[in-house]
Length: 375
Ligand SMILES: CC(=O)N[C@@H](CCC[C@H](N)C(=O)O)C(=O)O
Image (tube, rainbow, N blue to C red):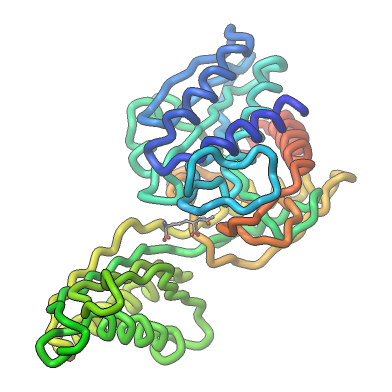
């Protein structure tokens, strides 16, 4: 297992933004070149990688997917192997996900499964989303799996815990970018300007009323503005403001309703503040909806494993473009406990590396037992 901890640490040092995972791709390809090659076929797609490990008597293809990209966060961990890419960090566990995937792949490269195994290294999960374009690629279509699985680290659960549920696991998402254009000017002459600090901050506050005033209290919806920018200097009235956020819902109907309210509020801001506005909805992900039969099969199996504490969890408002794989292919995603007080996307998150061995062991054992009737 030491190899995969070292791989995780090497990957942790080179977090890269979506579709720019060049060093990450190279590191993985270079590791793959050390494995026995008889059963391996490797394809690249943009900065992603697909690996087929041929089975001994294949009747189905079993897929396992990891994400690859880092986040624009300045790391503040106590690690000796901190990110070497200033302002970027693996703060969502994708370094751990990749190391686990390499661990499972390595096991089956040495101990072939009866069926073909397809390992998918997907770029740009944090945005703009690698899943949909990767699924449309010739490389993916050639090896399209009949069953697909993935995991995500869970800071809240202890090591040894696996949590999942049949049905919806993660929410629908849409990004949100709003630009406001007014007239700049001298701080002492506000009557000759049109201040976008005021318009932008008013809009940011107003957007927070959507969840409390427009959404059924029994629905779950989130409108988060993660970034607000405006202005250039303390004594210059700003001619431009920008909001960047994300919307989360558990139904597409709720997503449409929230977007319609945002549209109205942005248009009303343009009228009210005599400014120009532009909305860009960025990328959107469909919900991660676990298929009932394979999820229950995995949960029954996991429940019987002495080293695993299986939890049937509730829905989370996180998003994941793994939902697009599950829209076409039966399968499931699950949480892997990594026991750290800091949450996903936090600069101090330090997942417990013991979870790497837990996940590799669990998935090697589980995949070894999968038969065609389970897919
Ligand atoms: C697991 C996780 O944290 N996923 C991200 C996905 C982001 C999707 C997109 N960039 C957005 O912000 O809407 C998440 O923030 O949940």
